Image (cartoon, rainbow, N blue to C red; front, side, top):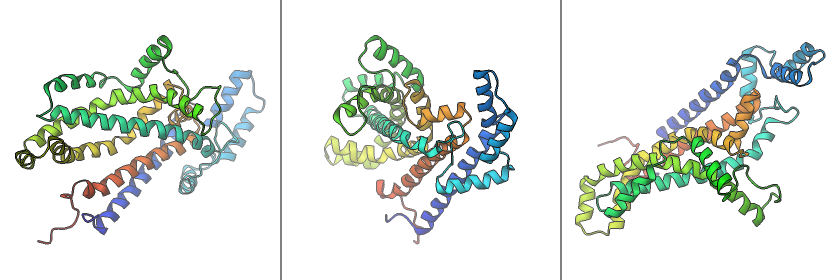
Length: 338
């Protein structure tokens, strides 16, 4: 990458580490600000179900000692960072003796598949629609139809998901309403399972894509309108280049940089929004698991998922920032020696 310098790469990598440190530290502190602790909550829940737990105080004290919750906060913090460095968060507090990572690992492919497809579709559809809306040579009939794609932009993911479940799932019976696959199929790399998993993923993906692509379209439309008046864009048209080349190479390529920045910065919000989507659809991803771990005050599982989200978001911003010179050769981080 000719536009990058060693100093800039090191600076961005330092900011990457700083972001992870700050985010992970907040993840450690925030759950502990809530009243109570997971061990007491678990014993109290058992007592409510069964009416009485013998030697409850002794049980609470022994389990706090087992998980290190009786130690000073700074000791817990040091141990926490040792676990983060190894990406080993110990045992689940709510589902002992299951390890936290053993609960998170099976959920990762479901969330990655769901979010990768939903993010890619919403971004590509959004910037394409926005670019066509902002391009002066777009046919009038298409200019009239395209704004209808913004209809669902103001509806939250989960609200639209409820509508899809009711209409498409329960009323029309076109697609499965909840879950990731049917009980009568065997999970694995076989066509019946793959087809069934795709059918179950359509509604969650649609709830994210249809409600988020409008934002990308509006942003790209404004960027494309500003590109229309640039000298290089007018010159490309005057040289008689094909409309497709003018649109893609001189229009979209120059207008897309702010949208890519917004995409990287919005990854965390998109992942956060998927939590409610996965909960609404009972989709077995990390979002659904995170919701359950928050409800049960399962520190270790919450920290494992939250740190994973922080790492993905920070890595996305870092990679995008370092790839800018490839997207637009005009961008360079070298000092001007002239």
